[in-house]
Length: 357
Image 1 (spheres, rainbow, N blue to C red):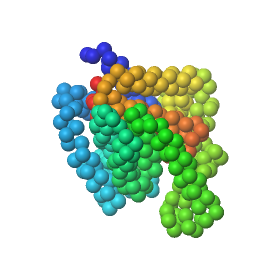
Image 2 (image 1 turned 120 degrees about the vertical axis):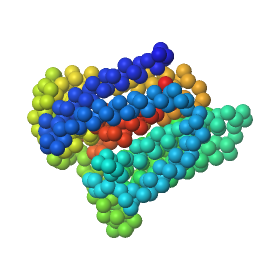
Image 3 (image 1 turned 180 degrees about the vertical axis):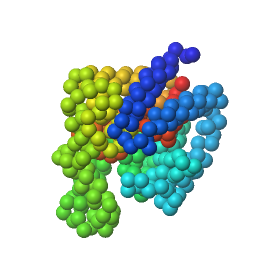
Image 4 (image 1 turned 90 degrees about the vertical axis):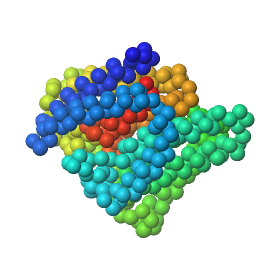
């Protein structure tokens, strides 16, 4: 085993133990029909690790050759969701196949990382990079990101759209383009958000006509997150806050809240193991991310940018998931990587890790 990447296997083992035990614990406050979730998660882990090892053995070059084809296929699948997708919690994000749910946007994140990494790496090979070259790179990356973003936005799934753009911006930031582009981008983002807020606040009828009533309700939920008056958030925070230093113990979450196995899995872990356990998990996650960053700067070419894309995706999801669970950020339905239950997301993480080891 390569010593440079051996840490990945160590952390994955720890994440596996935490994930399975926490999902099993979450089943205590779920209906009996959910009692096999931890078994399914074990199966997803086995499938994910198998895919990761296969990619390492087969090599990356073949997948690089067909990545644009996979990008097209996934865009078609995202489009198909608008007509044939399974309707869950107000969104059509999943296909239901033989009793299993498949979420194309999870795999689009991986294909997007690889396609952007190849694009940026080809750009970096140029000797005399001009402003025109930089502009064309940004346009290409925007087009690659914008197409799946529109389709994912229409599901609607705002969380993954944000992840797409965070991946793109992070990867461009570490390329050889001038920092002036990011200053311009910052002002464009601020201007866009401010404009949308003004339309929503002072011209609400126009906002509803453009985006629809469902998006008005979603925005109202985001803007009111500080009040912490939702059933899910209130019970989640209460479970965490009352857990003390060492928690209530395994399978002893005091209150019920929706989605304890996915969106609010951190609340289950924190209520079981308290402040000490929560601190351990956060440190474990941060050390894993830091080691991936160090690995990125030891690599060259496309692999370097693949790892950067992976870290940006993981880091945002970790902050967002833990932040929303403790009431510091709005609830967006983002899961905790490698810990939350979910086949599509877990397999996608292992797939991209196969390109890093």
